[in-house]
Image (cartoon, rainbow, N blue to C red; front, top):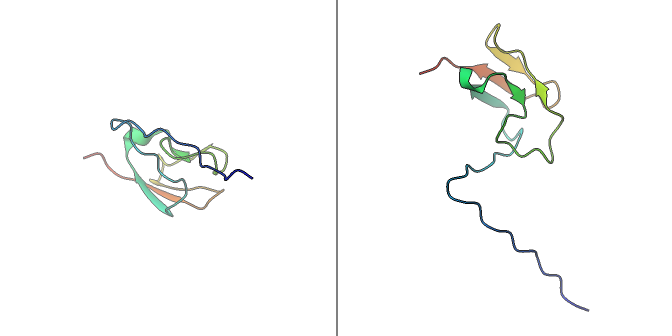
Length: 78
């Protein structure tokens, strides 16, 4: 029997940002640059997450995802 060998994965280039685990936190602070707001957000792994949904945050500055319960707060630009 041949032993199992893990496949080799090429390292990410240094200039590419690392992906964030979706729904790993319960709260995210977002800025106007993140609008329109979706959950999961761009830059998150999507393979084990829920379907992408857009969240209305512009009106009162807060939103909650109905799938994962993550909360979002709209911060003012600095």
